[in-house]
Image 1 (cartoon, helix red, strand yellow):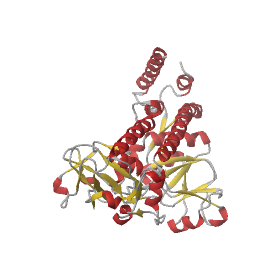
Image 2: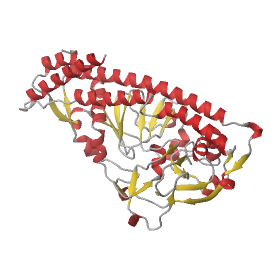
Image 3: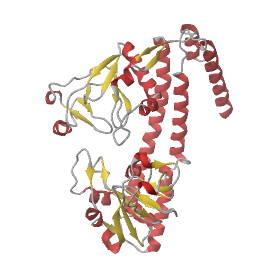
Image 4: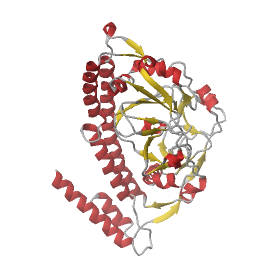
Length: 421
């Protein structure tokens, strides 16, 4: 029997009490702050972390935000708009007042709540309204959410186990990040040809370049014409792809714009200057629809080579030239047309693309190497997190059965682990 099994058998054999978050935890309020103000006070040396939702996080000095509601205790931040998620933070911080946070007199209980909320993240995302680009949850969604409240000793052991999982995953991710930096350096060095290879602008090799047509989120279907929406280029596709993850119906797109085998897709709307105009090559064989804020480039070059060379630091610098950091960053066709790249012969393009494809697969392929190990560890972590955080409510007739199921599951898992070892 594991330490957790022993604690549950001793302290809560008949289930645990469930309480709403507002009953068990103290809610903390944020700070009224605008995007312009955040840009003004952004200071890497600042001692106060400021969260604005999604990836927007800055540091600021306390004297630059004199009226801020600064949280100085461990708390769970509810990112309630855009990307619905949860953050556990222990250092002094504040956040935009459209979000909120929860704390407790016991640090362990705060961390326990964080894991409970992360385990139920999909529930909160499903409860969001405005399911467009900025879904949002309301305060009652978390206030009324019921969480298990096992004895503190049980919470502490669960947090310890899940912290260990998190630490191991972080180690693997750090190693993968280092490997990707190595790949970026190798790719950039390999594609720096010197004066022997001509430099060309994309407008000189493009046979056609045009924008796609808007496809809304609620117009995506399980079947129909394959399509790509601009956000997917950031989140789903790497250097090249051969199959679309989304489909739509032609009736939803009154002025359809297609892309085909070999075409390069650029996304011209984004959240950061660094990522704007990210590009991917399509090497599939279906005729697909390009969504809005995508520019399609047709050409007669090797598409995989173009995709790699357009991912180099030299190309990214050109993509971001003249762009201003704001909530939304835009590019356009003229900017893309003027990007310069080295262009060797087609034979050389293919050789370089083959080498870089092999190297990239080691960094990104979920079937091999570190990515596969991280994927497996993440699935294992999610399984155990769900198992560890599933309790029967005290007084329930299912409590005893649920307790037996938990112990059986853990015994089976340990036996399987021993057999695998």
